[in-house]
Amino acid sequence: MILEQIIKDSIIQKSQPIGFDKFMELALYHKKFGYYRSPLQKFGAKGDFITAPETSNLFGYTLALQCQQIINNKNCILEFGAGSGLLASQILFELNRLDNLPDKYYILEISASLKQEQKNTIKNTVPKLLNKVVWLNTLPENFSGVIIANEVLDAMGSKRIIKKETNFFELGVGCKNNNLEWQSFEKPYVGNTILPDIKLLKNGYITEINTQAIAWINTLFDSIKKGVVLLIDYGMSSNEYFHHQREEGTLKTYYKHKIGNNPFLNIGKQDISVSVNFSDIALQAKNSGFEIAGYTTQAMFLMALDIYQYLRNESDSYKHLVLLQQIKQLLLPVTMGENFKVLALTKNTKVKLTGFKEQDLSHTL
Ligand SMILES: C[S@@+](CC[C@H](N)C(=O)[O-])C[C@H]1O[C@@H](n2cnc3c(N)ncnc32)[C@H](O)[C@@H]1O
Image 1 (cartoon, helix red, strand yellow):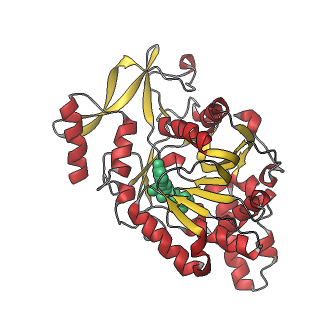
Image 2: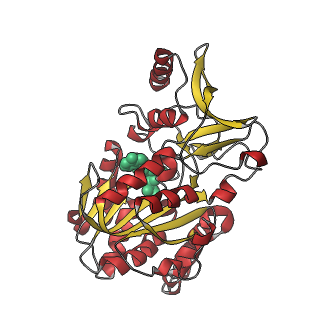
Image 3: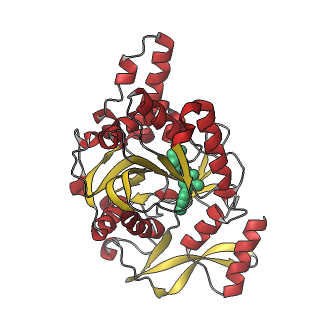
C-alpha cells in the first residue's frame, strides 16, 4: 500500500500521467518497496514464478557447455540479474567438472536481498567455488568473456503505446479519484525504435516498446572489450510481436503462480513482465557495433548443445525419469521451448557458437 501511495503521489505532483516504463521501474525496483528489492520469496514453488534454472540444473549445465567454448580457463563470466543464484551455481558446478573455470564469475544484481540469496545458494551448492564469485554494482570496464542475462530484459521498464486513428500515443499511468488507471498522453508518440505498420492495425491496438532494455544494450557494448553476450528471454521477432491478433500487447503479471494482466494490483508484491522484441534489441545491438552471432529458440539452443547427454549418462531409472520431465519443461514448445529465445551478440570475437549449429533464425529478426 505504501508503494502504491508513493506512485500515486508522484503522478499527482506532476499533474500528468507517468510513462509505464517509469511505473514498472517504481513497482519493481523502488529502492525500499519495489518487488525485486523486497525480501518476499519470488522464485520457485513457494514464490510467484519458475524460471529455467529453477526448473532444472540441466539448464545451467548446458549453458556452461556454451560458455566453455569462450572461457578457455581464462576469460570471465558476468551474469546480469542472477535471481536466486541457481544459474550461477549450475554454471560453476559444470565448468568445474569440465575443468574449465572462468577467472571470475561476476554478478551484477540490483537487489540487495537477492544478492544475499545468491550468496547463500552458491555457499550451499558449490561452497568451494564461492571465491570465484564477485558481486559488482556497475558494469565492469574492458570485460572479456561471456555475459549472460536470463529473463532480465523482460523485467526492465517498457513503454506502452496505443493506436488512435492515424497515430500511436503513449499509454501512461494516471490517477483518478485515488485509483490508478491507464491514461493516454496528449501528443502522438515518436520514438526511434521499430514500430508496427499502423495501417494494418485496428483502433485501440496496444503494444509495448522495451525502452530500458534497448538503452541497456548501448551501455553494455561500451563495457566489453571482447566477448559474447547471451540474452535468453520470453520474446519474439517484430513480425510476431506486432501481430494484429496480439491486440492487448504482451504485458503479464505473476503473483503466486497466477498470471494476470493488471499491473495496478498487488503493487510491490507481484512481478510485471513485458515480452522482448528481439528485432528491436538486435537492431540496437547492431547500431551500437555488436555483431549478431545467432538467434534461435531455447529448445533448439539446448538441443544443439546436447542437453540429452545428461539423460544418457544417468543410469538410475528414477533420476532418469525426473530429468526427462525437466527436459520436457525446458524443450516443449508450449512450455519454455519455443516461447523463449536465445540471442547471441559478439564484439571483437569470431566464433561459431555451438548453440546455433542446428538452427539460426537471425534472418527473421
Ligand atoms: C525474472 S528475474 C530472473 C532471475 C534469473 N536470471 C533466473 O533466470 O532465474 C530478474 C532478475 O534481474 C534483476 N535485475 C533486473 N533489472 C536489473 C538491473 N538493471 N541491474 C541488475 N539486475 C537487474 C532482478 O533483480 C532479478 O534478479
